[in-house]
Amino acid sequence: MQMRTLGSNLKKDVIQWDIVNWSRAIPFWQKHINPSFESYQCLELGGNSGGLSLWMALNGGESICSDLENPEEIASPLHNKYPRLNIKYEAINALDIPYTNQFDLVAFKSILGGVSRGGRNERKKETAKQIHKSLKKGGQLIFSENLIASPLHQFFRKKFVKWGNDWNYLSIDEVDATFEDFDSFHYKTIGFFGAFGRTESQRSFLGKLDRIFDKVFPKSNHYILIGVATK
Image 1 (tube, rainbow, N blue to C red):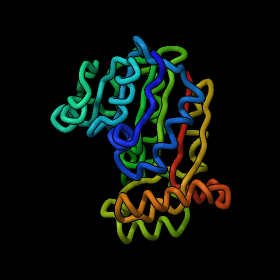
Image 2 (cartoon, helix red, strand yellow):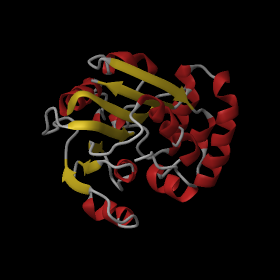
Image 3 (spheres, rainbow, N blue to C red):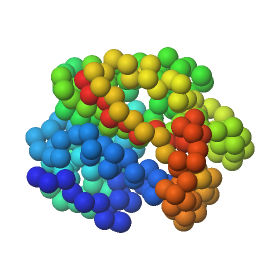
């Protein structure tokens, strides 16, 4: 099965917010993973409405869509738009994944800051360890995560984002140590302006600016980390 192209509607269903910037994860992942997920065992952590489960299932994977509480009620309306998908639903804590050597592919989008709320930085690495344990040898983690970014981002989050004071954003200095258990790890950082958009149309416009100006800003000022880690 050839990997499915993301049209605008499908891209919205998979990525769900700040679509222009966060959708840039897909081509980065595709550079480092198998072009087909046929017969893959896949897990999405922190799935909520299940965008990444949808993407993995559309590309041939047998997906588990998970969150702290079983997300079936939230995610199934989206998944039911696309018939004949192989998706199951489970309640799974990313700090205590009840699988060992099970998955070919694990995916998440922006969960580390929530898992480690209250400054519990050690939980970021513990989450990575749990994912590592759950993967088969040669299995891969694909993810995108919010970075702490610039002082300007930090100020505006505390001022305008309701969870901004509690969310424990990943810093660029933590990245290598967090994923050090994996045999290989590739990542890139992107985005500066998009985080300041208050509506999706604003984020879309600002995300297009980011495609132009990303190289102007250092990694430490970007607000999105995109990664692929292989066991």
